[in-house]
Image 1 (spheres, rainbow, N blue to C red):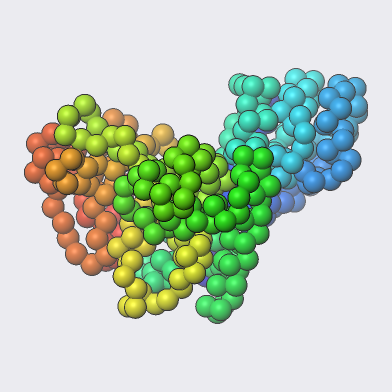
Image 2: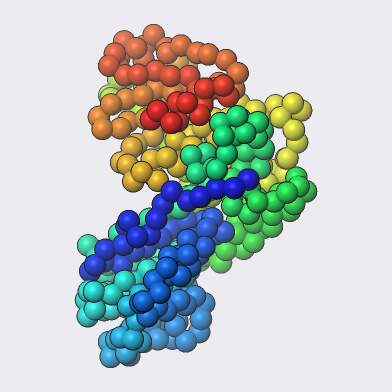
Length: 374
């Protein structure tokens, strides 16, 4: 299936600031970056990768004269997988301060690594762009074709390589390799993550609880660990762009739950690869969870593409009344119920408590129209 990215580097890049591109591996950051560099025909450009030994040694020394000699010949400098470069934040600051007219672009597949390295040195000196798997709005297909392929999106997700794969076997191979190399190798390379078995067990436990409130205590018991360790592993999974944490919504109503959280996977295909389930929807008992994960991520992708400050929550009371997704945008509330093939009505307590909010049901028949209207 063909697609085109809505995000453009040229609309975000600015003088006196580095551009930091975040997103999971193989989501298309390098492709977008190389396409942008190819258009800059009249500008001397440099593209390097963060695991280049020479680049790592250069930045590690933090020597101003050498960094400026490195940057001086080029108008545009792009460092892919910049989280692998020691002292990247300090070095980037030196370059931006000395050459404010130059474009410096850094990409990273770990906000955990890269943001910690650039945080203080590049404070006020960078913009960010976050790339996620392909959104429905980026697909070059008619609404009829998209709805016809909906089962595939729920099962195999929307990574660029997966969308381009022609067979189900190829899609599964790509996703399994992605999970193996990214989830269980890259993340395990971090100092905070020590146990591959524990990481796998926590990821699987979260995958089976998509769309439900997660109790860290229950997860800890399931994986035979402690709450602090589970929380740390979940934090790393989020910062490595595997899952997204969503908190409960509350305006101080005593009956509302606000301290627990839900977790969604950034891609349905990755979620299914984690649990090893690629069966047809007709044979599955988790269609509701797949649908809610898909809807949430489409909403989140749209907000990310539009660089909107939308906030997402879920809503639940201690008596069991709930709303799947709450979207707060510009001070306006939208309550969203995710139903694969049905309609729903807002809980009476929600309507009474938030009378100015909008309530919608998103199902497989109307999802494209609702997404387009937001």
